[in-house]
Length: 231
Ligand code: ADP
Ligand code: MG
Image 1 (cartoon, rainbow, N blue to C red):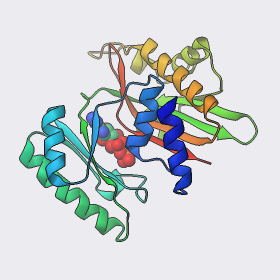
Image 2 (image 1 turned 180 degrees about the vertical axis):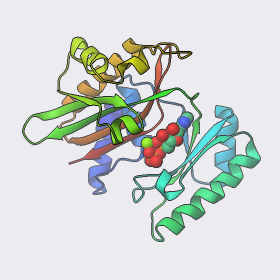
Image 3 (image 1 turned 45 degrees about the vertical axis):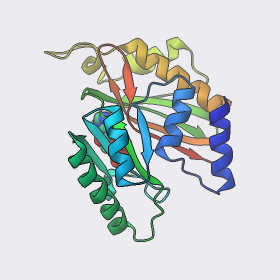
Image 4 (image 1 turned 135 degrees about the vertical axis):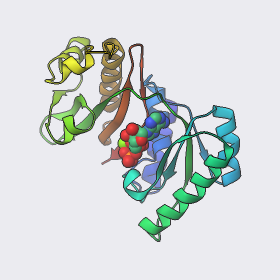
């Protein structure tokens, strides 16, 4: 687990609690959690080059240790279809970030593959003062925020635990196929939950982890946003 240890070590050295999205995604990838392709661009020109390499449509996001909720800062632009749109979005994101927080440190702009729309789920972990590392699963948007329809288990979890966390949600029928929506790949979500459990067990300095959202597909799943907070 080379990259993970290195990234955590570096953040500690810089006295940084919140890992940046590319750092969190690199850690996820090392633990076998599927993430979209990404490259950190430091200039508009780099952003265009990476976008051409990754392929359109593209998503751009602000990468700043001072901006945790990127959308709130106008720091996420989705569905960019060509170089011109990428260049314009790059400028806009930097401008928005400065408006949001004048002295925000900006590490760059993350150029990433746009994952197809699908049912969005949330996988999380939190270090409970009493129970220790605990993993969480829920559906995205109102299901978590409004209805609090989420399930928790103390880590480490088994495959059976992970399955229960998913199938015992009130909103589970939404994942199990309804009307024209095909069922989501539950095994892929189970695998992500088990990997997250292993990740937080092996790295006790992780205080919070948030994969929000993970796109759940009929075949496979993909994490498009990852946040890790250290103690
Ligand atoms: P925030 O820091 O505001 O949570 P996110 O990275 O989650 O920022 O982006 C906001 C929303 O944009 C996500 O909830 C998701 O719906 C969409 N999104 C972000 N990245 C991608 C991507 N790579 N592919 C598809 N949709 C994305
Ligand atoms: Mg998010």
